[in-house]
Length: 243
Image (tube, rainbow, N blue to C red; front, side):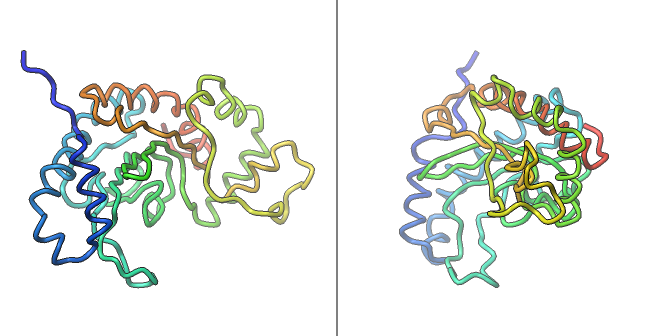
């Protein structure tokens, strides 16, 4: 049996570093074949290989290997409202989203929340400056955020069970943006005040670069993603979504 090939190699990060130094359309088009072979093709292969293992975690988690509108974010940046007009991202982003979300969803850590129907999902981010994986709901809309906070108030024990488990905390930490002051309408003395102040309900974990070069990357990621299941299940329940 032929040895399994790694998905990503040092060439993946060499390309991303070079793109960071030469973030221009002319340079990118001259090196597009390199992008296809070292970044895009292996990312799409990884997404396809994750589809079945993720369904074992939840039948509602989608790894979509479509070249357009799937789990892989576009390399092009949306510069319409940005002061930085660099045309390309210098990282790779992949979202594994809830089936309730549009197939064109963008995910945690991308330029938008998981579609405009807020739903929990998983994410993988590759960059020369540091790679990470995680999941949850990034930048939920105000009505969704209120539902999440209210669910924390009504279900403090289950939230702590989902996010304070020793195995979970050994790998992940809750992250994202938070308010400086308690949100209006919530008890400033609440035991979970720091969670009520969250603007993002996400968790993340660093992924060492050598792990990304491991041919067993799917197994390594799925082992981590399984630890996130209770949190994603809790977030789904807060929004009356199946998981």
